[in-house]
Each structure stands twice: as C-alpha cells, then as structure tokens.
Image (cartoon, rainbow, N blue to C red):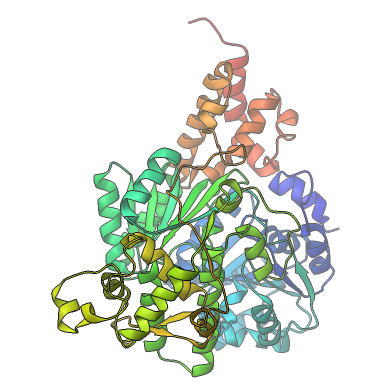
Length: 607
C-alpha cells in the first residue's frame, strides 16, 4: 500500500502538517487530477509535486528551465532519502545513461529535465518506456509569450496531455496576472484542470521605493544601516553595471560577486555556489540570476534600476525572505530609468501588439512607484487580489507620504516643454525653468522664452521629481529616439487650461525604516545569551557536515529547524523526530551528530 501524503510529509520532510492550499493540491494530484498552481515564492510549491511523486507509482518528471540549479535541488532531495536525478547538458554520457536506465527500471522517485530535452523524440520514447507518476511543469509562466521569462521550448509542453493522457500534470508559478494565467492554461492544455490560486501576499517582505539621487551611496547606506552581514541580491539592468557595482561593493568591504549571462559559465557557477553555500554573500546580477533559487535566508533584494514590469519586480523581490523571516525589497529609480526602458522597448524587435502590452506593464510599474497609498494594496490589486486594510509594512504606510499642490509647477513644466518645441530632455528644460545661462540655452535662444527663469523657487532635484511624476501619470511622454525629448500628451490639456489641479508626492529624504514589523534582530543577537553556546555549536556542526557533503548548510537543516532543536533540546532519537524539518532519513543521517551536540551542552563533562 502506497504511503499517504500526510505520512510522506512527516516521514520524509519532517513536517507535521501542510500549509495553505498544499493539502488540497497534493490530494488532487495524487488522485490523478491536473492542476494549475499559483503560489508565491517561499509558499511551498515544490512539495505540491514532490509529495504526490512519492505517493504515486512511478517517477515524477519535473520540467524546469533551471539547469544550473538542478544539481542543488537533487542534492537536497537525496539528503532526504529521495531517489532523485536529473538529465541536462552538464552531465557526461555515462552519468546520463545511468540516470536513463534508472528511470526505465523504476529506480527513481523524481527526475528533473530541461524543456528542450523533453521535446527530443528520444526522450519522449524513453518516457513511454518508463513508469511515470506525474509531470510537473515548474516556472510555468515561461510559456507566456507576453512574459519576461518566455522560453520557446515551453510551447511544446502542451503535447504531454496528448502523449500521456493518463498521467496527471501540475503546472506551477509564483508570478502570473490574469492574462498570463489564461495563457498558461491554454498553451499547456490545462483549461479543464483545477486552478489553485494562493494569496500573492508576502507579509514578511517590506516594500520600499525611493527616488534615485546618488544610487550607490543610497545602496551603501541601506546595506550598512539595515543589512550588514546579510545575504542579498542587487539587481542592475546592464552587465557592465553589474560588474562595476560588484567591484565597488567589494571595495566597501562587502562579500559581493557578479552574475550575468556574459560571464564564463565557470565563473557564474562559482559565484552562485558561493552565494548558496557561504554566509553573508551579496550577488549583483541581471535578471539572469535568481529564478528557482532556494536559499531561504536572503534578507534583502535591492534594485538599482527600474524593473520593466510589476511581474518582474514581484518575482525578483520574492527571492527574499523565503524562510518567513522579515526581509526588505528596496528600489531606487529615476526618470532616466524610464527613458532607458522605453528606448529599449521601442527599439526591440516584436509586433506592435507586444510592445503595447509592454508599455502598459511599464506604466503600471511607474504607477506603483509613485503611489501615495499602501504599496501592497496596489501590488495585490494588480494580481487581482484585494487587501482591505493598509499593510503597515511598506514605506508609504510606515512613513506616510506628504503631498503638495503642484498645479502651478506642473503648468510651468508643461508650458516650458511646449515652448522649447518638445525637442529637449528633462535636464535642458530644468535649465530653462531655472534661468540657466549656458551655451545650449543661448544657442537655441531659450533665454528669450517667457518660461525662462520662472521656476527658480524649486531646485533641480525638485524639478526632476515634478517631471518624473508627470511622466508617470501620463501628462508627458518620453521620446525614444535616443535623446529622451519630452512631449505633451492629450491628458495635460485640462491642466494647461486651468481645469485640473495636480497633487504630487513630496520626495522625502530617505531614512532607515522603523517600526515593529521592520526591525529584524539578527538571529545571533535575538537568542538569549545563555542559549548562545548551543546555538553556535549547532550551526558549527551543520556547517561542518555541509562542507563534507558539498551542499549549502540549509540543505542539511534550515535555521528554523536549528531554532526548534534549541527550543526542544531533544536527547533521544524519538524526541528528535518531533523537531520541525527532521524526517526519518535526516534523523538516520544526522540525528546522532546533533543529539551529541545537545547532550554535551545539557550534560557537560569536566575537562
């Protein structure tokens, strides 16, 4: 008789009960049903296919785009006693052949493969010859041609239903608006599947967005005052900026490494392993890094450039705080970010319909940046979810935004754009408004305009804020011809005619976050002094074992498991099984080592 999902959860994974929608999803797939699962990063998506694969006869086949991470995922499963393997281009021929034989002979519980391999006729023939428990399509949003992670090989995965009609399929993603959900269901032939949509809310993540003044110094202040010694990710738009920022952070004393698709594969893998296996490492990356990262203790995700969409930002910020502990999502952006992204969008290849959809997504991202109400409410609303009360854990809740009557300033700005011929970028317009007397102003006789010098009451940064917000609200648009010229839109007419007033947010000076939800004492300092020796001993033993096995420390036990050991002080094997995250396999492998540490501290012997 096959084990029940509850038995597998406790014996293999060491957890006493499912959370949220996990139980309903898992039982549905165990019973042979198809499922489309939307669950935020850190919500336990992997259990939704791992548990059914261990309950059903045959091997669970996981289609994943994350070749660089398959080995880590398989290593973690093997530590749990699960017979897991993977097939991708990194394997030598002998190892790949051995994994194929194990699949055919029914000797694997889970097999990870890349979508391009699954689409090969030879691989499909092998699957037809093998016992298959289920197909799990991870990162299912990659099938969306409207999405930022589109993979053409995912378009072929709809044929799984045709070729394996009796095998249940489960598609999973952490990021999908309604349009993307519908596209996933249509392209993967899951329209008749049960759809499970968990809350998109990650209440442990504090969302903060600030205007960009000196981005490097702002980042440095953020790291030193709030996240010294923490693991985190810093995202930049270009490869050049990634490498320069990582180098600069190292000069400032941080353990920082670059990651982007242009680096040699060996360097990328080495830096990724440092991030996963060492403590306090910062990865500076393009969006090439992060999808599928299982590191639970990422304490911050920072963006030095504006993401292209709310989906991109939400997915990237979701890599923080997977352990449920407080984490920070911090973004600095300015008008130049908007200009750069719009230039990239308009100069990209693609149909006009696609560009129109991307413009809409960028506009939504700008709206989120400039909102004066709770950011989390706006974020969740974008994904079709309602939050009735302000969250109390975003910058606009913790430091309510002041607004000012910017009607006259907006009229000045719009008039100056018009009178200079809608041919110039924001810096030149500000020079004219503030009465600048430089060569460019004189060259075009803009010192003779009626708008020259009428804006001296505001400094240059205040004017940049005005223009940034006018662009975000659609009163101005940015030319994408490479010069970033500002143009009026039809929306600005009521302002110029005096029929509409404008309230803009007042950019405040950035301060470290305050409040009970945002103050996160370091685990080492949060633990009482009398418990510190045992806590440090448990961590040291975990690190030693992890190094011996060549895996990240969290693969041995998460911090939460060590904390539970500290609280329970188990002295016998049966007691250890009651610790969250300790299943039968890990008890057999590591139980004696950790019991030894606890006993030594509970009953010390004299030297």
